[in-house]
Length: 516
Ligand SMILES: NC(=O)C1=CN([C@@H]2O[C@H](COP(=O)(O)OP(=O)(O)OC[C@H]3O[C@@H](n4cnc5c(N)ncnc54)[C@H](O)[C@@H]3O)[C@@H](O)[C@H]2O)[C@H](O)CC1
Ligand SMILES: [K+]
Image (tube, rainbow, N blue to C red; front, top):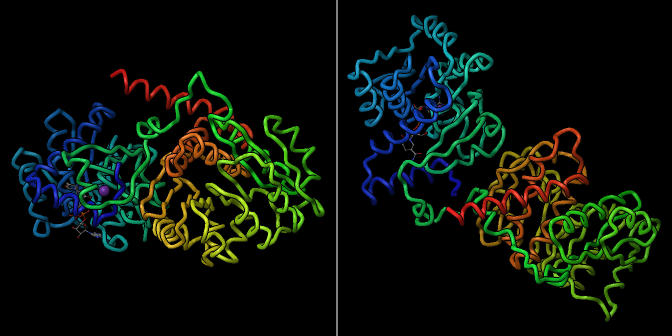
């Protein structure tokens, strides 16, 4: 499913109207009906207050008001704005509502108290004040309305049409206030603002409804961002043949760990093992090996020269050994600590082959010299916002406010695959495409869950034989596992169990799709 900004949504609309011939009023009618259906299904017999602005978002609200009234709902509809400023379609939707003998009240200083009383009597408040057409921060009247809506949060369900009013659909920024919705019904495909914070935190449950724009329009318009979904991921998860052996599923080499971070290599190995890797070799500073073995008996151990509990400067020489097995994917970084230097990392990069994933402390070293991976392909970087901020010499806030742009630009510029972690992780490719995972949970907001992800990525790259497919599977399944695990008590080392549950759920989805 495509993920768009406001301009791209307008282009999709225009294409549907001009090239396909769907009249714009039909799009509005379908959009309004779609929200009406969701409301009817979820809130039968509710008393409704519908709030409409004079843009097309308000037009959708007028349409839904008419349909819900026809279906017997008690609806009070308010226009916030003026008839003169309505768009052509909104004016049509408004007239159809009025001519259906529905009284639409105008919000004025005089009617303010009545408006507030009606809000207080509502079971459901529908927010059609402003959608993707918002410019800057909400003007005073609209901001006051939003604050009144939000005051009823505990007593009424709040449903936003397209996007909660006040959120910038391009970047999720809320300049002043925004509606805090329980349910948001959007059309055709989701907008970035639904998945970027703080806006994303105001959407409640997000429903995407088809309004008749074919999916191929996104491709035609060259939209490069997509939202990952169960149906797609379930087709990517590699099937396992009964007649297979450990060599069928790839060999992951993890170069990680130090005395202060004994758990990191174990968790990385666990991520790989619990998601189906055939073989995992852990290269560790030799003094910590005996501690890690107890945590992951499934791994093969490769002790490297040690200096005070970290990799010694020349420990990479272990890679010179001629009798090494073939490693299909290499992970470097979890728990390295600060003792290893950039020359050590350079040697490791130069003396290994295949897909290379740099995480954690390896990313901090990469920040010192971004040319380190220039001659290596494919390279995968998995920074959290703090790590990419350090690499790019920005603040974490700047990263969080520009997640999409930063991920896409960095991946293109440095020809790497980048996973920008966080709630709704973004996968950006060297070709400039990007994918957002809607999966995840606060259970993952804990030390060690990134290490597990790195291992899962390597494991899925090996099993799918494709870097992008591997990244998509790993990020998505990791997020799902987090959702299944208890938010408080689940730790990174528990994820292994839930990875299995997530994979089973996806396999079931794939079976269902094939039997329908
Ligand atoms: N394909 C689709 O998704 C469809 C979406 N539809 C709906 O159309 C809106 C977008 O409509 P548009 O007219 O472009 O803009 P809005 O109604 O969102 O907003 C414009 C409206 O809001 C006022 N406004 C702008 N900025 C502010 C501000 N800072 N403070 C207060 N008011 C502001 C401005 O004056 C205009 O009046 C989309 O969200 C969907 O709901 C189509 O109906 C069907 C196809
Ligand atoms: K809205």
